[in-house]
Length: 591
Ligand code: ADP
Ligand code: MG
Image (tube, rainbow, N blue to C red; front, side, top):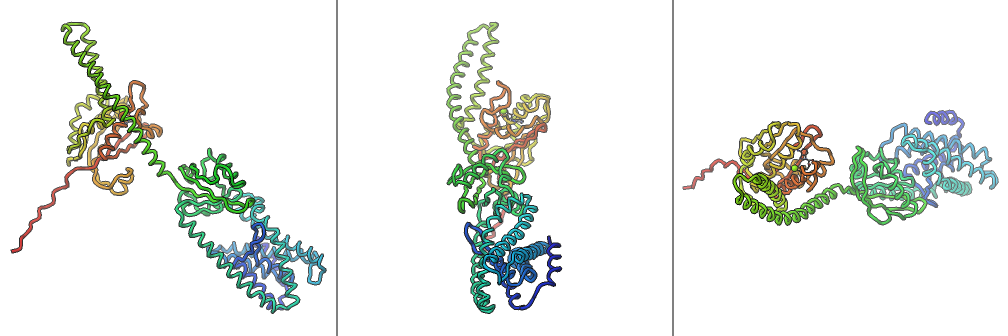
């Protein structure tokens, strides 16, 4: 295109007449200035007419196609050089200049071929001006649509149809305007025309300033907005994408402009949401009308996230655009989930506590009766074994109700200060018996005593539950380590745990080399009654009890697990270790 423009320009420019020079210079100046200020008259149905076009047409009528190439090239240069905030690469400037050179040359040729001249009669002149305007329109817009289509990978025909075709009438009106200006100029002389043009130029400059200011204002709003703001055109192509949107979706503005909005939605939701958007765009009705919706969005890295969407529709019915205000609600969702979880725990806790209490009484009376029965039996009664079996089962049942009671928090906790490592060490023999010889078991504790304030029995229960789970995850044997130490969490580490505060924490880790967990299990892990174990083996209460106790002790629990590799549960409890006593200070009393 650039080569074609250059060849045309340099082969035809020798044929141009440059005299009289001043009016030609004036036309060049006028055309450059109006392009620089991008002065446009808004006309019917939202299309715009640029004043520099009117100048080009006037120049064509007055000076013919060859000299007007200078006017066109000048306006092409100023458009890319003066009228843009960012620096344009040289090829864009040359491209623009070439297009305008070719456009004015073609339009001028058509005008002359159709018999256009100031001396022609009105009918011929009208036809010539019309032909010139349409030629200008086509030659000017088609290559631009093509260029946009090539760089944004869209259909050129569609771009031309939506962005350019509607401005055809403004080209005709512009040409007519030029003809009228010339008729006035012819009858009153160049100097008067220039005089008349001065206020017009001044006004256009004012319009330009006002436009720049309102654009800047709009830009500031878009940039400062906390919400992602995305504007879509009739084809649901993205036309505006503010910094918040860049951050939220992970696309750079320049990469996403002109692309389909569906890119921001997960594939399975696309059809439905696009339908809603189109309906709202076309009719102003549908599920989006005046409502806030919660949808899922898709980031550039493929992750999805929940967002809240409000859509505004602006413009007239056939040229409406949609602006979407998108707010990330991942954080809110997580909080809701937490709340739901704790409400559920509380409800189940209350229920379980009530049942466990009564059930425990029943068990105690069975136990009492079994004891009485044993006493009444002869020492060699063959039924003694069965009664002993009954007692054993009742005891196991009572153990379960104790768990339930702890879970329900009905059992009043008795916090006291103790050394966490000692509590764990005290369970060593019991835990070893529980997990059996196939598992390599080790307890490691930091040399410094790690002190906490908590319910001793509850902490034992936490260790027991975690160890039993680890054992269950290693049916073929493996390695199980319980670790006790102390850490200082900074703000970032504390934040990673949820709402934790920075500070010193006692840390209890239980690591196994067992089966690990999949995502589904990880997501439900702490839910009461969630178990992957076969019926009769798991109650699904172990970890929810652990969770309850940890929360009650103002602590935090995290889990890291990899399928086939193993699992580590880590519990953080506020440390109660007394800081090292400071060196004694001697105070000398002044005499
Ligand atoms: P239960 O042990 O009765 O199934 P829990 O609440 O203790 O209930 O555990 C819930 C589920 O979490 C278990 O069924 C298991 O799938 C999984 N789980 C817990 N601890 C581990 C672990 N250390 N390794 C693998 N999976 C585990
Ligand atoms: Mg368990």
